[in-house]
Length: 472
Image 1 (cartoon, rainbow, N blue to C red):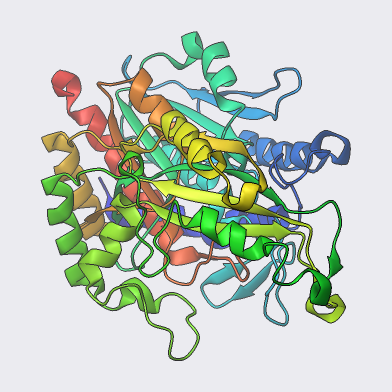
Image 2: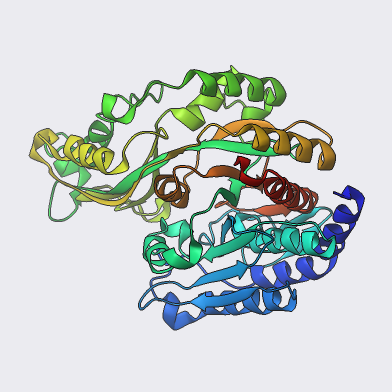
């Protein structure tokens, strides 16, 4: 591998053509279908697909067959099939749908307003996960330009990931024969602990959730009249949530949501903690004086990767403070999100969550829980020796430091699906979402040098995969 030539080829594309394309992509408000039920009528998703398709075809990758596949009633999927120098298959994955706007963008920034500040390209979707198609195809094109052999490559870019990838299984079934049986899967939709080395994701948490409805009355009444007579709906809702979480320390109580952490994952967390130190919590925009849930970096890493955690991500029924009169509220609706350890079954956990919230309601309240997420996490298989060596080589060549292996707290439904369908495949899950990149929140940005280096690392791994021959 001529690493200097690879870096220059990828760097020129990232600084020019790719940056321009990503800038225009950020302007498209192609929110995932869970956040834009009228996505078909609005046409933003089709606009993003068309833009990516035009760019990909313009890359003139030798032999590439490309199609924007559209199953009836489902979000589109970009499918690219690139012949290689042998029959084996590498599958590369990313997505192009986006999270909603979110409030709190600082002055001069916005979700659909691309802004380049130094090495950072601000705007929704650049890092999560619009960059993926550019990294994947640039890596493959670079290998062709440098006359470095590679296996057949299949690139899949879906448009439903931020909604739980509920459309993706239908596409995987429909394209099963065309995909084949990948030996290596590269997913470009994960995070990195810093921007100084390659970070390899070893596990992903599962996710269950839904809407909890709690009703005490048919309408609100004067709080002076009802206070002390009608149970307060906010307190009843808190009582229900306390069945799931110990509010004093955040522990998730039921054994169905917990697991034993594998010993080798604890060792990896120790290594990552030594590298990150206090950055494990200082990367978050904590208010002055706010303390993390623990001060030991390793415990925080295990908390966000192998332990369950509850979040309330939305609520209805509470009037705005400016309009809050002295009224006892009739009911509340809260969006519950429960992250699960990687090896906890999502469907069973969802059923348990519903039972715990609905059974024997306090004060006879009318309580219903309507699930909307039930995703099982993923725990990577042990890396083959060739892959471990390749990742080490790639990180040292293009970042100057050894790679780091660590779990991630988020969920990528595609990984559990692929792990089940292709149990003999090797996996490389990586990404560019590092400190302060803030995916899903305000001020999301793509760190361009990291995207460039990850692209080079992907090219190195694909080349090394080919050189292993049948040893994989």
